[in-house]
Image 1 (cartoon, rainbow, N blue to C red):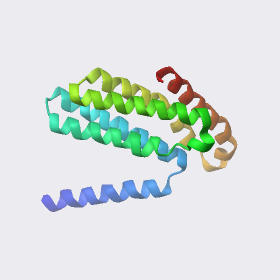
Image 2 (image 1 turned 135 degrees about the vertical axis):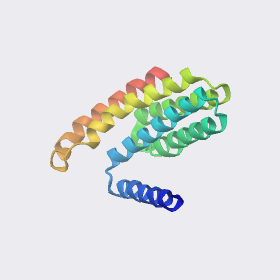
Image 3 (image 1 turned 60 degrees about the vertical axis):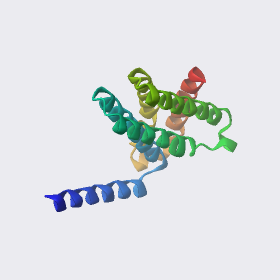
Image 4 (image 1 turned 30 degrees about the vertical axis):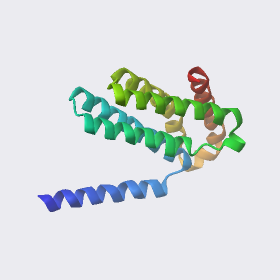
Length: 157
């Protein structure tokens, strides 16, 4: 049984790594959002179970995804005000999660999950476009995704 679990875990890692290599930039952003949302959801589960070590590990993972994935991917030079607003929003989310970790504040984590889901919706639609349609739709949907992110960023900055 032990060898079976190790093989399954290795197979899952290969699947994730292959998905990352083959993903479009929009799909990579979706994967980051999905990872942060999953980590936050697990943290809430662990808070309810009073499993403080697992809660802390999951919130740390979510903060790392936000800071080292989403924030780090912003192009501050060409992104202008939108990139600055998103940077502020990501900073806000990380701060909320950091405080939620120290206080076991489920409501704060739920707030961050909602923000992540709102941002994820637009990027999910963009990432699911077939390659033939993507070139025509990317400009419009990319602008819509950025506008939605900018709106949320302004609301929370």
